[in-house]
Image 1 (spheres, one colour):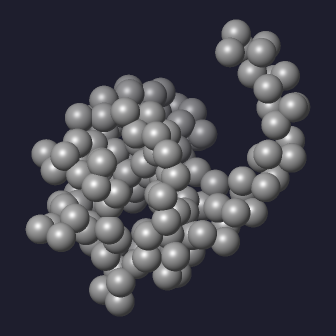
Image 2 (cartoon, rainbow, N blue to C red; image 1 turned 30 degrees about the vertical axis):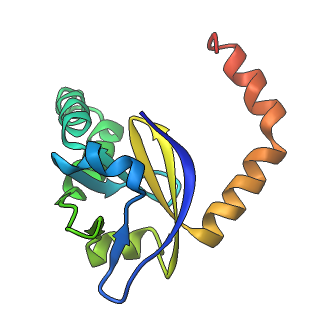
Image 3 (cartoon, one colour; image 1 turned 90 degrees about the vertical axis):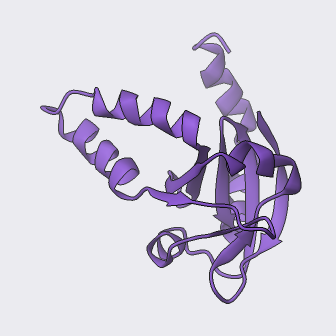
Length: 143
């Protein structure tokens, strides 16, 4: 389970240090892809395979499902953790998420999200401000 919020820096080659507590789970294989809200999603190989199967099973006749599957599947890239605990993020994904130097690694149970630090701070402030409305909407879903 991935939880917590960590700050790391991209190096000049686009490598990102993975928090030490998550490395063992990602060592057996990992996939990074375009996420939502202008961040990247990083999955274990197993979690990715489960998600990819669900995406592949979505109805092709619906434009929204095709678009979402393309966003996630076509943007995906296998990544490996090197001996220093880093992953290389492809340039096209760094550009998509506007990753500069400082990156926030946020644990969200079955995935990690990789955010540009300033975008994360803006997103977090807005979400915290609207937390009451969010909680009310989630209560309608039984959460």
